[in-house]
Length: 396
Image (cartoon, rainbow, N blue to C red; front, side, top):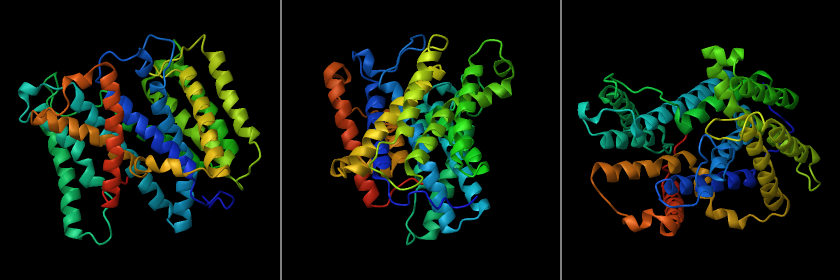
């Protein structure tokens, strides 16, 4: 694969801002999930509903942003002189890390028999959420090598021990992918997209073709009697291609924006794709309802359309109009997305393991709960600012 010489090579602040805002909202809705008596539009829609809320858009938005970043990540590594082996090794490690973390998080939530476990389920969850920090922290060059090795390999050893300390509710030993978790789904979608991006050398037309191939796989996987649905391994791949559709959409929109010079003229190709996403979602909706939980093609397409229009707004505001100061509030999350995602889990399981109750029940209901969720999300941004300052950043 060759360097994309015509790919814009400056920092794209609008992508960072979009990522930071998405992460902020993700922390907000995750905290809000434990609050009672909030409006349905502030929660995921039920699986049997034909509808979506802004909460159902958060995960697709992050997948979309992952895709937008892929062309720049490849170019940066190629410019640096990384060999294909180095790039593939990095890709595999990143995808595997996301899948591993995602599976451990899911097992911490449910599916265990605490009465048969050596340690409490809460302490198990605390360790499962905490160990990715020493393992995947981006240590500065001056950090002692011995200490780094102790932290990284020690964290890996703890994860291995946690596997054998886990007792399923069936009595079996060891964790299992009940489902892959949000991070695991991101890992699979990222891996599928990167493999194809490499094979076609980042060619826009090939990525557009793959976008529709992923969409077709999603449709067939939800069509009763289709060969994809009947064959388990095909269904497995097609299921992950559902989320890969959003990552590939991000790649396509990124190439449409940034292959070449940034222009103040209206980008009709991007607008056309955004409208196409909405049109296809509308046409498919009578057959495949809008549902995030079921991963329907109409949900995927509406999400891709909304993300395209949202990013176009950020692009116009920040790259064309140069209005960037406001985004500084969200940038700590953009710079450290994995850590800010898992840190609330660390706090939750720490409090659970040691019987600590910081927030009164008053803030777990209604409007006070909504306000607290906003405050908590803001606190997390300031915590990330401190972590970033002291080089505590997860880097897969």
